[in-house]
Image (cartoon, rainbow, N blue to C red; front, side, top):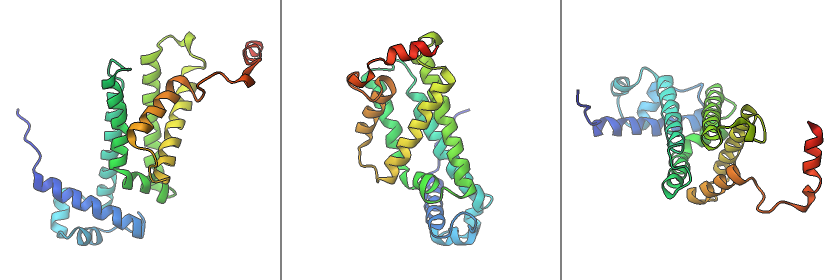
Length: 213
């Protein structure tokens, strides 16, 4: 069966409703959402709203799910071989471009309304996506557990928390770096760590770590 292309009118209406939802959350929070208010902001009828969503919280959940699905898809694209190539780097940049394109929603969920239950759920689901990506990434780059500097589960959680921290900071600071530059820096940190050259202060570190075993 041939898939039919999405109806542009349906897409426009849903985009208008999602933009209205964003404004409503920003002004009223998530606990006081109503179909009447969202429909009025979008300049559509309640009947039109119900053609697309069951209620205001269905719109809220689907908007979050769509954002997270796009994040997961762009991250998984980064695992396609060859990993370290111009094509691979372009896929890496796309992760941050997608976040930038949806910055208002991410800011609401991760910063402005972070204390509300749905925002907390969004953050947890986002962290899980970043954790899954980190695990797959470690496996793709180095499948031999013995050649990792820490247990895989521990390393993946370290990387996922770093991703989350950088994304939240980037959004909170109004994205001071372009997606391409941020992707480059994250790739450096992910593969090389924060140091270009081994610091002199590390003298004795190898012996210390060896003695700890």
